[in-house]
Amino acid sequence: MHSPMFTLEVFPPKRNAPVGTIYDTLDGLEGLNPDFISVTYGHGTHSDRTATARIAHTISKEYGIPAVAHLTALYSDKAKIDEALDMFEEAGVSAVLALRGDYIDGEQLVGEFNHASDLVSYIRSVKPDFKVFGACYPEGHYQADSLDQDIENLKIKVDAGVTHLISQLFYDNEDFYRFLDKARAAGITVPIEAGIMPVRGAKSVRRMAERNASRIPDRLNTLLNKWGDDIQSLRAAGILYASEQIADLVAHDVDGVHLYSMNHPATTRRIWRNAEPLWRGASQCVAPHVNLLAKPRVLPAADGYHERASQPKRWKEVRYVHRRPFFR
Image 1 (cartoon, rainbow, N blue to C red):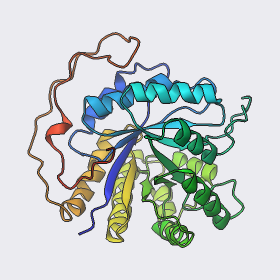
Image 2 (image 1 turned 60 degrees about the horizontal axis):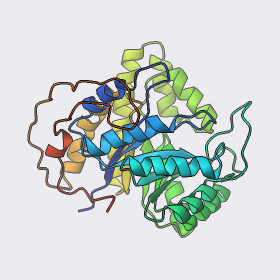
Image 3 (image 1 turned 180 degrees about the horizontal axis):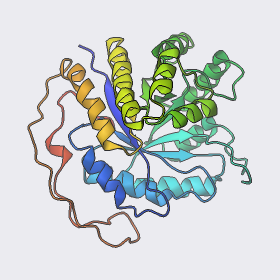
């Protein structure tokens, strides 16, 4: 029976927050056993590659979960990309999500990597053993003239060396299925994961939809109008909405589901609790109960990636046997 991938995204703490707060998020995700966790990365000239590398290293080495490091292109030259790739490699991370990044007012473009495909080609030339992921847009990139044109650009990116795609968020699965049909018809054969972002606030949903030119279906709009001023009820409804999206996606045998955790482990766990039986039905689960271990001691920030005292085994003890080894 087909078993889709299940993956997560986390992001580094804000600049004024201690990096150690990410461990609270990771500890809160214990037992979900994703195929990998991706770690976001700033896209301006002052973005902190070190935080991404450090967190990806921790996920991979201390939690036993493969990690994918985000890397953006617009405001970087080859020297900065080389530095980032070397840092990721030193951190034991051999998978990168190559992104163009958004334009930022007041920031000067470098001009060496104007498209994500340019970055993909360069990574392939300097780090041929790296696994390179790419992004895709079920409703089309907001700067593309049409979905068909965006898929043509996506094919260029895949031909440049992307071997795995993760979609931008969407709220109507029919949009994803239509995109998937067009992508396959265009000759794109790599795995395409469906990106799901739970609803946590009416304003944030509408802001995100406007920024990405995404559609808010009537069904979701009804929820936003009903509970927009009742945040707890809206978040509960959002968990159910995301869970139903995932159930329908799994029923359609998608390649995988990528859940944007937004560093909210409680919400992520509730969604997984609803969806987990769908994976269990397609695999044999060997996940014995493991008590949460005491929170590890956080050491003062230091150069390099080892910030904490020795870490006991965590997620390595509760893996699903069906998981495919992603980074051989």
